[in-house]
Length: 192
Length: 345
Image 1 (cartoon, helix red, strand yellow):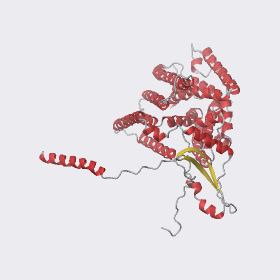
Image 2 (tube, each protein chain N blue to C red):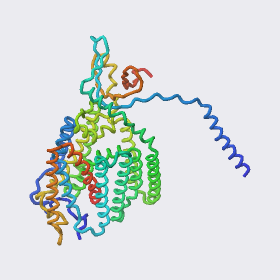
Image 3 (tube, chains in turn cyan, purple):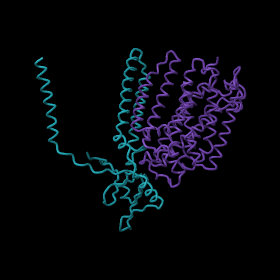
Image 4 (cartoon, chains in turn cyan, purple):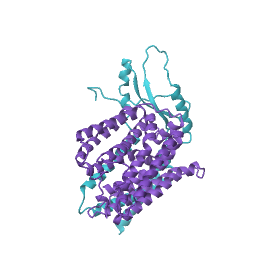
C-alpha cells in the first residue's frame, strides 16, 4: 500500500513538473500566414533569349476570372478552418466515430467464431480506398503537380517551353509576385 | 404470391429464345469499350457543351426508364417485404422533400442559408441511416446473411460526413452514376449471364479512363464560368469546393460518369434481354397480376412521359432555371436506386 502511495505521489509530481517544463519552452514564433488558393489555371514557362526583362503575360479572360475569383473569395473560409472552428460538427463526428468503433468491435466479436474473411477483407479494402481517396483529395487530385515541372531546368537549358498547373494564391502583404515551382532534387548518377 | 426474387430481370420474359438478336460477347465488349471511350473523349473535349446537351436530351428520359424498371422490379404483393418497402418509400418521400425544401427555403427568403453545412450534414446522416436500415432489413430476409458490418461502415461515413459535409455531398454526385453500372451487373447476371465475365472485364477500363482523364486534364486551365449556366455547371461538379483542381477536369469527369449513367439506363438495360415494346405493361407485376392495376400503371407511365416533355419545354425556355429545379428534385431517383438495388443483391 505504502509503495503504491509513494509511486502515485512520484508520478503526480512528475506530471506536475511538466507544467514548469512547458513554461520554459520559448513561445512559438507566429507562423507566417499561408496563401489561400482562389483559382486554378495553367502556366507555361518560356525561355526567351531576346528579352531583357522577365514578363508575365495574362490573357484578358484569365484576368477577368482571377478578378471574379478574388471577389468571391473574400468571405470564404477554408475547409480545415471551418472544421476546426465548428466544435458542434467535430463533436458529432467524434460521436459517430465512437459508434463506428463500438459496432465494429461488436461485429468482430460476433463473427469471431465464423469469421468471414471475405467481409474482413472487404472492410479493409474500403478503409484503404477511403484512405487513398483522402490522400488524393489532400493532394488536390490527379498526378502530383511537380511531375510536370520535373524537366523545367533541362527545358530552360534547352530553350524549350514547359507547361503545368498553377494555383493562384492570395497572400497578405505588399511583396513582389512570387512564382514557386515544385522541383524535387533528384540525385545524379554517382551522387549519394 | 410473386416474390421479387422470382421476378425475371429480363424486361420481356419469355422472349429469350424467340427473335433475340445474336450479339456475341465480343461484339458486346466492343460496344461497351467504344461507348466508354467516346464518352470520355467527348467529355474531355467539350465538357460544358456536352454537359448541357446530355442533360437536355437524357435527364428526363433516363428518369422515365428508371421508373419503368423499378415498376418492373416491384413485386405484385409485398408479402414479408412489406416493412422493407414501407421504410424505403417513406425514406424516399421524406428525404426528397427535405432535400428540395432546403434550396426552396433559401430562395424564398425564409432561410438565410446560415448553418448550411449543418443542414447538409444532417440530411446526409439521415440518408446513411436510412440505407443502413434497408440493408439490415434486407439481410434479415435471408437466413445465412449477416450484414451487421454495415453499421460500423455507416457510422464511419457519418463521421466523415460531419467533418466535411459538402465534400461528402460532392462524393455522392460523383458516385451516384456508378450505381447504374452495378444495376447493369445484377441485370446481366440473370438476363445474360454469359456476358457477365466480359462486362466485368470491361469495367476494368473505367479506372484506366478516369486515371487518363486525371492525367490529361489536371494541368489544364479552369473553364470560363463567366455566365450563370457555366458557373452552375462548374459549381455542381465541385469547382468551389476544390479550388486547387481545374474545373475542366471536374466537369469532364462528372459529364463522363453521367453519360455512362444515362447510357446504362436508356440503352443498355432496356435492350439487354428485350424484344418487345417498352410501353407494354405486361411485364410489370403490379399490372399483370389478377386484380392488378394495369390502368394505374399505364397512367403513371403516360404522366411521366408528360413530365419528360414538360422538362424539355422548360430546358428550351429557360435552361439554367430548369436545370436547377431538375437537380433539386432528381434526388428522388438517386434515393429510389438504393432499395431496388438492395432487392437485386
